[in-house]
Image 1 (cartoon, rainbow, N blue to C red):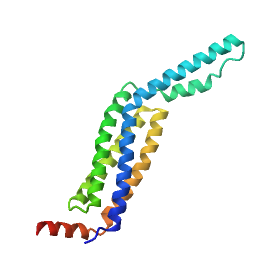
Image 2 (cartoon, rainbow, N blue to C red; image 1 turned 90 degrees about the vertical axis):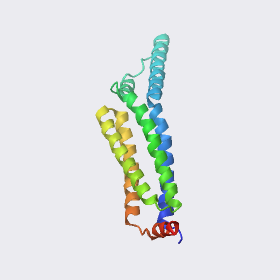
Image 3 (cartoon, helix red, strand yellow; image 1 turned 180 degrees about the horizontal axis):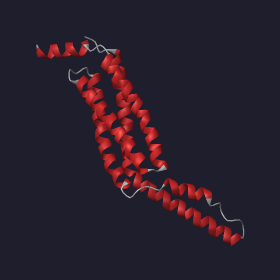
Image 4 (tube, rainbow, N blue to C red; image 1 turned 120 degrees about the vertical axis):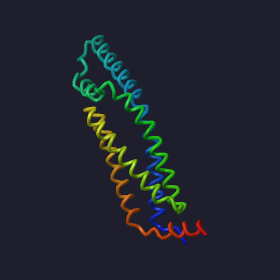
Length: 179
């Protein structure tokens, strides 16, 4: 039997989503270092602008934008460790998601259960990251939460498609392997 169109579509979208998840996992793991670098750069820029204004006798740089950026980097102490750990966990979750999506395209008998498991773990991990982002009470954390909601919606839609689709091709694959 031929591979159903829904399996191809869900598999390809799943691979794309999983690859974006792998990239995002790397970004999440590197976030504490990136935030520290941005903080240092902004601090140096603020000092340079103040020194230039004092030297030239011009107006001092505005304080409000610098204070707004300071709020963006205001995280609890535990958040950096969480980002590194969550980044590595997200790498495995996304890798598993890609693997399950590939198996779906291959019409392997175990692909349906594998995809249910991968999508369920991805949804649960996204919800966990959202709870942690809210607990961090930071502007940057809320941005992470909104980005995660996009993936959450797509995962739920893919899960619904797989749950409601005709799985006869996967059953016939199993019957061929058994005989």
